[in-house]
Structures are given as C-alpha cells and as structure tokens.
Image (cartoon, rainbow, N blue to C red; front, side, top):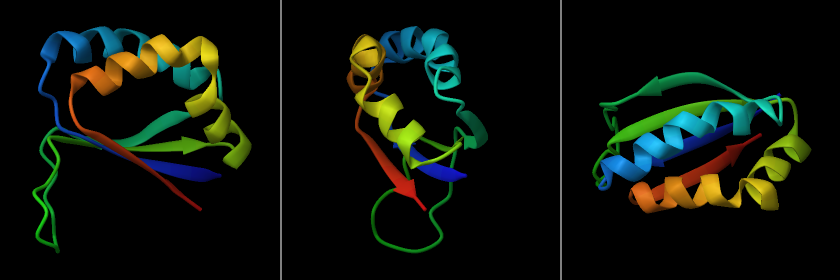
Length: 93
C-alpha cells in the first residue's frame, strides 16, 4: 500500500464539481480510494496557509499511483482538478 496526500485550494467551484463527478471512477481504475478527507484541514506546524481541502488517497502500490497520474485517458479529469485551483500531490511511501 502507498499513499498520496492531496492539498487543494478551490478557486473555481464549477471545475471542481465537474472533477468530483469523475474522480471516483478515475481512482477506481487504479484500485485507489480516499482514506481521509477534510474541507477544513488544520496546519499543525509551519508557516504556509492550510489548503482549502486535504485528501489522503491509498493505492495498491507505486505503479498504480504513477499509472493514475500519468494515464493519458485521465488527462481531461486531471485538467479539471488543476483548473479548480492550486493543487499539490505528494506520494508517501
């Protein structure tokens, strides 16, 4: 099991709504699932502002995570997420 930590600050609600409708199927294609999420995360340490949303995704392995982020068939879905606002995704493990 490997995890991806997603930090997103939504500035375009329409793009995020369109992304949210399709994200589950895109994740399922690679055996991923959300383990935890918050629409109001709290930063415990550091000076950077907390993101608007935080999500912890699990993937079966690194290959699945890399397949999800690099899948050309999912590019339109990833583009919707990116258009939603600033986003950072960090692979853990």
